[in-house]
Amino acid sequence: SNTSSNRKDPKSVLPNVKNIIAVVSGKGGVGKSTVSANLALALAQNGAKVGLMDADIYGPSVPIMFGVRGERPKMTEVNGKAMIVPMEKYGIKFMSIGLLVNEKDAIVWRGPMASSAIRQFVTDVLWEDLDYLVIDMPPGTGDIHLTLVQTVPVTGAIVVTTPQDIALADAKKAVAMFGQAQIKVPIIGLVENMAYFTPAELPNNKYYIFGKDGGKRLADEFDMNFLGQIPIVQSIREGGDNGKPVMATDEAITKKAFEEFTAAAV
Ligand code: ADP
Image (cartoon, rainbow, N blue to C red; front, top):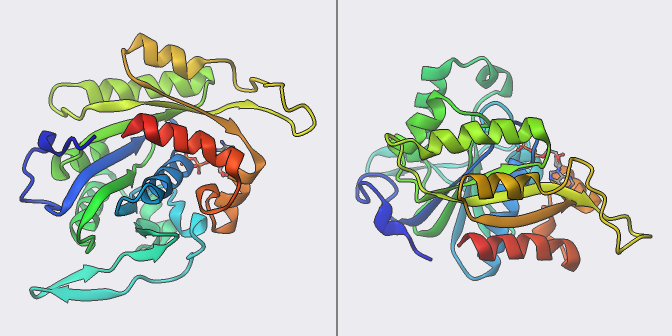
C-alpha cells in the first residue's frame, strides 16, 4: 500500500520518492543488509521503481553484495549543486556510503559526524522518481537513527532479527526507539531471518539452529505485523558474497521466502 500520506514534509526532502522504508536491527550480523537488498530486488521484480541506500557506515555491505567494491560513483551537477549518481544493477538503483568514504575513516566517526554525513548522503544522491527507497540502516539505536528519521520522511520501518535471545533483546530496543513519540515512524512489521535450516537430503526437516519462533513471539508481544521467516540457505550467503543477491538469481525456492515477506510488507 502507498502510505506516503504519513510523510512529514513531502516537499522538502526526496519529493519524488513515494515510499521510504528503513530496514533496522538491534544487533549486527542478523541479515539486515541481506534482507534490504533482496527486498529492493523483489519490489523491482513486482514492477516498482526502486532504490537501495546503504547507510550502514559501520559495515557497508552493498559494495560487496552488488559486486562494485572499489568503484566510485559518478557525480553530476543539478542547479549548481554537485549530486551523486546512483549505480544501477539487477533493475534497481543503489548507493552505499562505503563507495564514498574510506571504511576505516567511517568506523571511527563519532555520533554527530556520522549523523551529518548520513544526512548529507541522503540529500545528495540523485534518486529521481522512485516508488520505493529502501534504506539499510546502521545496526542499533542512537543519534544516527534519530537524525535520519528527522531528516528523511521515512514511511515505515522493518525490523530484522534472528530468533536468538540476544538478537531479540536488541531488537526490542530498536522497536522501543521507533515506537517512541518523538520519532513517529510506523513499524511495518518484523521479519525473522535465519529462522531454520533444511538440509537438501532431508527436505521435510527444519532445524531451528537459533531457536524456534523467537521473532514471531516478539512480534506478538509488541503487536507488530509478523512478515515471515527466511530460512538459513547457503545460496543466500553465497549471493551476498558473490555480488549477486539471491533475488537476482533463478533459485526459485529460496526466492519464494523473500517474495512472501515482500508481499506481507507492502
Ligand atoms: P547485517 O546487515 O545484519 O550485519 P548481513 O546481511 O550482512 O547482516 O548478514 C550477515 C551474514 O550472514 C552475511 O554473510 C550474509 O550473507 C549471511 N546471511 C544473512 N542472512 C542469511 C540467510 N538467511 N541464510 C544464509 N546466510 C545468511
